[in-house]
Image (cartoon, rainbow, N blue to C red):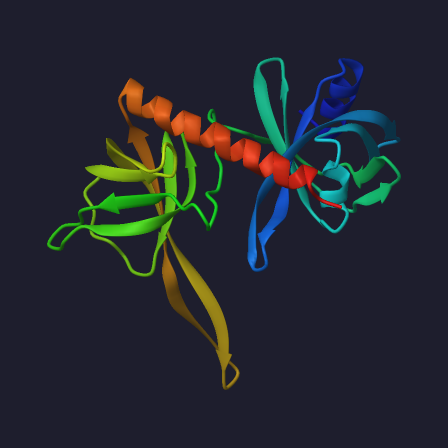
Amino acid sequence: MRPLDAFRYLKDHDLPLILSFPLREEKDRFITGKGTCYIEEIHGSSRVTFWRFAPSRLLTSLKDVRTIYTTFEIKGDTYGCRLTDILIEGHRMIAGIPDSLKPFLRRFLRVEPSVKAPVLVYLKPSHRGTVAFLVRDISEQGIGFHSPSILELEETLVCGVGLPIEGRIFILSKASIIHRTESEQKRTEGGMRRFHVDGVSYGLELFAGPEDANKIRIYVMQREIEIRNKIQEQW
């Protein structure tokens, strides 16, 4: 589906878009903020105007954002794209129509924990003791975290998750590694480009029991409300 056709469909059927953008939570800490909007007008084949934003102060958080990721559903399929060339005028936002769309495959809401109330994941790598990592993001069925070095992990394992709800709770879940990405930093030395590994990002799929999955769901919902309140507090 072409982006222009998708936006026309959303406008004609008065369907919402979900906007995701960097939101400053602490001085040096950005998380993903989210909100919704609708399409008011499409200008030819290049520009589109959005309105009816929620939370009501969402536009205040977007005023200094250069790129916004948006997802939306059409006939049971979910798509995503990036909005650029953004201009905010009054209670409306104008952006360029993207060149392409991509299928959006995530089924569960994912949030980034607060630095002040972190989520921890505990793992037992091969040939070493239990190690703990700060969780980068979490959903009902998945966890992302970063390690400064490569971990020798089995494809399936048991992990522990510490959640900041009900004071502090700890759950155990079976998990499977679904991706591992080595991040590289580029530097220049004497005109030569060199690379060095700057840690590894891991993604775990969780297979928690119904009761424990519900605890993760409660945390995710509470955290989502915190983030929405943070947006609403923007001036």
